[in-house]
Image (spheres, rainbow, N blue to C red):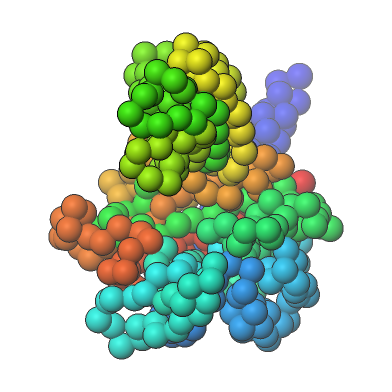
Amino acid sequence: MEFCKRICFGLVLFLLAGNYLGIAQNESAEKEVHKKINKKADNIFEQVVDWRRHFHENPELSNRERQTATYIAEYLRSLGMKVETGIAHTGVVGVLEGGKEGPVVGLRADIDALPVKERTDVPFKSTKTTTYLGQEVGVMHACGHDTHIAMLMGAAKILTDMKEQLRGTVKFIFQPAEEGAPPGEEGGAELMVEEGVLKNPDVDVIFGQHINSQTEVGTIRYHPRGTMAAADRFVITVHGKQTHGSTPWTGVDPIVTSAKIVEGLQSIISRQTQLTKAAAVISVGKIQAGVRNNIIPEKAEMIGTIRTLDTEMQKIIHDKIRHVATKTAESMGATVDVEIEKGYPVTYNDPELTENMVPSLQAIAGNENVVLSDAITGAEDFSFFQKKVPGFYYFVGGMPKGMNPAEAAPHHTPDFYIEEEGMKLGVKSLARLTYDYMINHTK
């Protein structure tokens, strides 16, 4: 009996030792892959810079990114990928199958530029012009999408070189029209989703990043749950009664009524919204009424934006806008039409996914350089991907080290500037998130 016990105990020790040895070997192998990712990112950085400068010098507006798409597609084909073009007009998708079975990871970069005339003094400054909404305009990558393309191309190179070690499939999604399709057109992430970009093979999870001109190089910022706001457009048309400006009591003034509605809209945020739950904004950006100084017009129109970080609050605020506008108009003897057009949804970082992937970012940037930040009221159509599959969206620093963020030119401005060294961390993070997710979620 004692002999059997000893044999059994020895067998257990042997199995445990073998198990620990296997774990140690796996951990060692993973560390080697992580080192390779960092080394490869360093080695191809000059190429990433060249790509970025090419796209910066040759920007194209939303749904017009034809040369950009051709350049991307040719490169992905040179890596041996299966490539599909023409998705949502000018979108490009490359599919990389790893050496082993596993989940499908989507990586996304937006590729469109803005109607902004560049004012920065860099050798690769954009001098492009085009016609936009009937006006001659400059064209500039004033939001960093040129860096997004280059960083994802860099990640594509790294992951292709190590495809035999990948436990799954990667979809490289180069998305047009993130800044919004021109009036009368469809485009962007919403159209890509409608056209099946997340299918065949079905994407399990998606990662996206944005360079930031007011975040220092070497820093990554993230926020779980609602990280960027839903952006909805509203139009309120106030119908009054036209009369002479000298006798306002003989009519109904839609301009004064509009002023009271604007004030009431602000009270929705300051007095009727639970701002400790999530931030929200209502802004009126345009009011149009009347033709001359002594005529009270028949109607006035106001156009604005609604920004919310919580979908429940979004619905409540929409209802309150209709209520405030209608009842205020009634109190003045006027009537209103209220139209609310839903735009981009909340950019929602899946909490569990975010928690699981932050350690990967900390491993490449350092714990102190991965910052839990506040949500922002800007919007991103990456949110349409996140409505279908879990997603994680984060920000990579592009501001020169030591610079005061208040002195850095904001996005969408002629002086927008990115320190290219920041792209190195972006390339590493895309590759590292992909590999680590596959390791931890092999089917």
